[in-house]
Length: 462
Image (cartoon, rainbow, N blue to C red):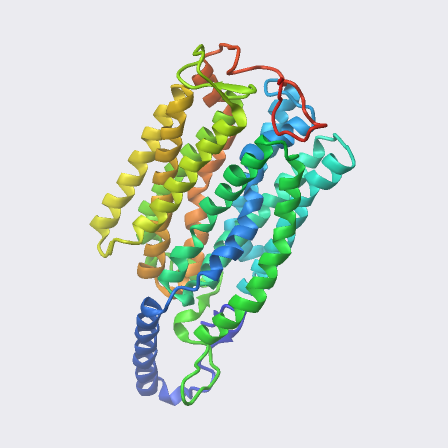
């Protein structure tokens, strides 16, 4: 059966004569296995291409629209947390997860006419369009139509679903050391926006500047991918030896989607524990993160309980919050790549460790205590990042290479259903935290000092 390479090329044994199938077929099969083993050995020893991190950051920064920028987006539309429009906006934000979830798998059918590399380009363009909507139509033109939220979040979600799978698959030939840098792009992106960006916001910078910054980074990422990474992919995926034939190496080809479906028994059972762990940790991450924004929604945050008098500026509180998030998430992804994890038992133990961290983080989140939420965020994101790294490393190592794209797609498709559940249950998690109570500086049920003119993401009564 023909296979699709990174650039959409097909390979088949068209030159083989029918009469030579029994002898030459076995020889070519042995030779192919030798090529695959050699290629995998070369990948393990390849130096890291750290530039992949920059591309990941440029694109994944758009994902921050479902973080604190989500609340900024909501406030710019003059929508309160507990109003009917607030609940509609929550469902609009959930579109990020719905479309991300569906496109991780659907791209293999809807976009099968495109090479995996072309899908990366397409997702970058769609991400830029989705991120353009808030700064152009809301902040610049002043349109307060709630439909902009659905369009923006929908485009961002579709882009994420395509990009994450396609990009991780495309850079696989560059080796595990390169992959370990690429996956840090998620926490690094959130750290840039939520720590550096909101530190500047806390000192008076309009939040619209963050939206524009995210948009302007998109073409930078696209150019770097085209000029710096794609040429290296050609070197890594094409025979460049003394007798360079220009053929695509067997280990770098992806089976057509229906071929992967027919041979599910060769890779799906291996994937099951990673899918389950991904579901749990994504549920906790998406639910707990957004619930914190909607709980600590005054201009001040009480540090040691809802009625505590030790107050901290909200912007600075969330800067500290995301320092914990970013450091724990980045550390966990690097930490996971320090272990060999060469047996199923070791991988299951690692996954259980990650899930335990996430669940403990959710339990601490429900306490609704400001200072404790920093620890809860660290545990939640450490568990999610650790399991993400364990899974990406194991998929590249244990799943047959021709099913690498299909494995990433299914892992994210089923696992990300947890993120959907978490994002749609944000209001319920907030209720668990607030227990139906409204406090002076916590669990407010109204827009606290709309600050559209000042560009602040939240109200400011100072």
